[in-house]
Length: 77
Image 1 (tube, rainbow, N blue to C red):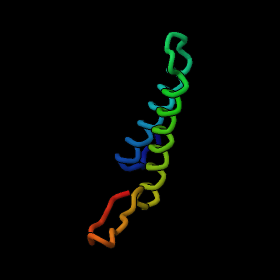
Image 2: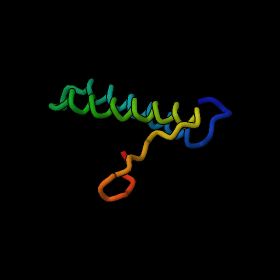
Image 3: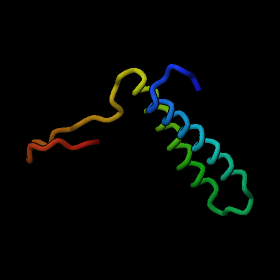
Image 4: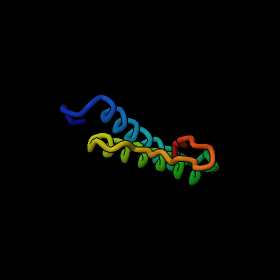
């Protein structure tokens, strides 16, 4: 990992790497019956963590608020 990155970015990158490695490990185990589903879920987590790291590094929040017009409340998406 790079040195000058904030802790949260390093944490997201580590999570992305671990999730991707676990996805590949899960897919390559012959004893597991639901390999493709586990692979898809874990790779989705890996990509999400990677994009969070990129967004946070660029100063962009990885979520947005949508205001509910009927109730006047902010909803996190």
